[in-house]
Length: 208
Image (tube, rainbow, N blue to C red):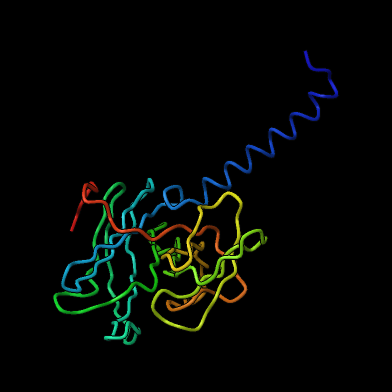
C-alpha cells in the first residue's frame, strides 16, 4: 500500500495528466466540433466538405477559397456560405466546377447562442514548408495556395507531418473581433494542426 506522502504526490500528478488529456481532446477537430476534408474531380472540380462533429447545430460555416491559374498560383477569392448543419451531418461547398481549379484558404464556423451568431472556430489551409527534426518547433507552415504568412509549430503529441503535405491550422475564434479570412493572426499559435485529407468515399450523414 503506498505511503501517505506517495499518495499526496500521486494525486496532483494524476490531476495534471487528466488536464493534459482534456486539453488534447479539446484541441482535436472532432472534440471541437468540425471536421473538414476535400473532394477533387478528374477535370479540376474541387469541393470542401464540412462535417459537424459537435453536439450543437452549426448555424453556418463560411468557406473561402481561391481560383488557381495554370501555374498553380492563387488569385480571386471564392466565398461560399453553408447554413444549418445539424450534429453528425455535413454540407459541401463547391469551389471549382468542370474545367476550373481552386484551393481552400479558410473555414470559419458559427453557432447561434441565445439568438446571436457566435463564431466558434477558424481553420486555415496550409502546407508544411519545412521540417526541423529535433527542434521544439518542428514545422514551418505556409499557406496552401496563397502567400503572406508562415507559422512555426511543434507538438510532441501531434501527428507526424511530411514536407509539402496539406494541413489545417485550427484556432478558437475571437468573439467580437473582425476576422481575417486570408491569414492567421500574427503571433498567435494554433491549438492544433491536423492533416487536410481527401474525403472518404463512405462518409455518412450527407446533407448536400
